[in-house]
Image (tube, rainbow, N blue to C red; front, side):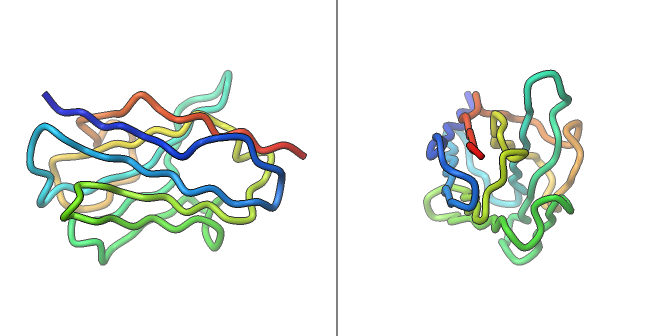
Length: 124
């Protein structure tokens, strides 16, 4: 049984920062890329950021480039998303995901396991 548990969400003012964490358990995640997606009310789930299993290759959505940083600690089976200069349009439920492949894909369909999500709300 694979489990992904996100944490770190909350309410923050525009311009502020949050750091999301996602702890994975239940199997080994070596050779697995990990990613973050988000879903706002009434919208489809969208890609935010992803990191290769080595941690050396990352992908970002254009809307978060320069503001968000994804990283991972394989010893802890944990992936992080540092979010700076937050904007009200970043408000969403943020999901962590793991794929069996090692490359940091950007599509929802590429990921095999999902967490329950953590809410991020940015006030103006």
